[in-house]
Amino acid sequence: MSKTTVKPRKTPVQSRSKKRVESILEVTASLLVEKGYESLTAVGIAEKAKIPVASLYQYYPNKEAVIYALCESMINDVMQRFDDYENFESHKLGIWELLELIGEQEYANPANHKLEFELNRAMIAMPQLSELHESFDERISKRFSSILKYYGSKWSIDELVNLSRIVFRMGTTYFEHINNNRENPTLAKQSKELIMKAMGSLIQDCLHEPATA
Image 1 (cartoon, one colour):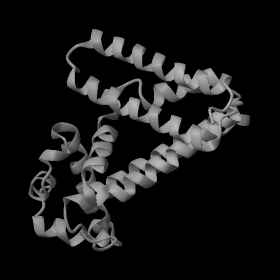
Image 2 (image 1 turned 90 degrees about the vertical axis):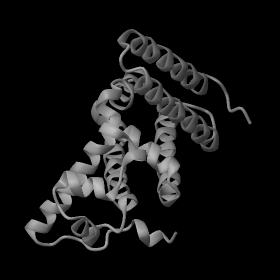
Image 3 (image 1 turned 180 degrees about the vertical axis):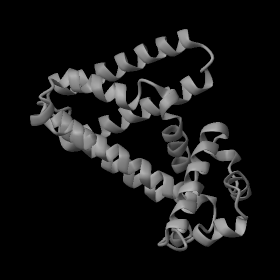
C-alpha cells in the first residue's frame, strides 16, 4: 500500500469543512476508546458522526488515514510535554522528581490515556502506520536519552536510546495489563507500583554505572 493512502485527501478551508473534520476526528477518538482500533470501520465513523460515508471519504481515503491524523496529533502532544520536561532551568527539578512527574503524566492513570494506548497499538499493528511508529519510537527515545544524559549518565547515546525503548515498552505493557484488569483497582495500584519500581531500577543503573560497552 502506498504511503499516500494515509494522507488526507484535502485540507478543509471553510469553517463548515473544518468543523466536519474535527467531528470526524472526535468521533474516531471516542470509538477507539470505546471499542479499540480492531472494531473501527469507516462506516462506523460516518454513522456516529451522522454524515454520509461519502462525506468521510472526501477528506480521508480510509479509516487508517483518520487514525494516522489522530496519531500525528498525539505525537505532537507528547513532544510538547517533553519540551516541558527538558526545560530544566525553568522547572529546576532533580532527576527523581522529574521522573515522578513523567510517570504521573505518561503512565500513572491509564484511564486518562486510553486513546494514546489504542493509537500506539494501531501504529504497531497497522502496516500503513509502521513508518510513523518507527519515527515516533526513535524521536521519543532520543528525547528521554537526552534527559538521562543531562542528569549525569555516563552511558553512550546508543545505550541510552536502547534503555529508553525498553522503558517505554514497559509502559505500554503496563497500559495493556491495566486495561485488561480495569475492574480490579487493587491490582491496578500494585501494578503501578511494580512497574515504576522496575523502571526506576533500570534508570538508576544508567545514572550510577559506567558505560556498559
